[in-house]
Length: 164
Image (cartoon, rainbow, N blue to C red):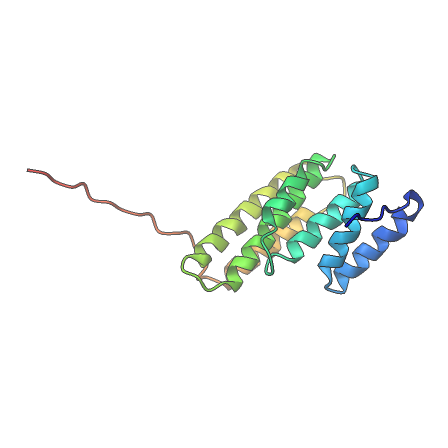
């Protein structure tokens, strides 16, 4: 089946729809619209950001972390690359907290720390009067403070095998 191309004049309205679908908790629809926009405007920064967010909205339903990370390199702003890398890690951490497999709380902890590291990088290069990275860092810190069971994995200790 061949997809129908979007007309260039329809891009602004399509991006508004994509954001609306995200807010309506329909990230698959937002993803599809962004892919249509990127099909005719591969460097459209707004479409890339909405697509990253739509992919991370779906982390609990399908693996999309790597797909979202691949898009980071297409963002033109160093600040946005760092900020959205943090978003990806933070959402991955929250997805880990929903899982009940052994070690998921360790994975969540490490993903939160990685997110916080990205937010610190973004904070250092943020535009004037933009504290979004600070707000996200604080959100991660509060989450960890409220969930003390999220902690680093214990270091494995191994004893040398003695031979005779």
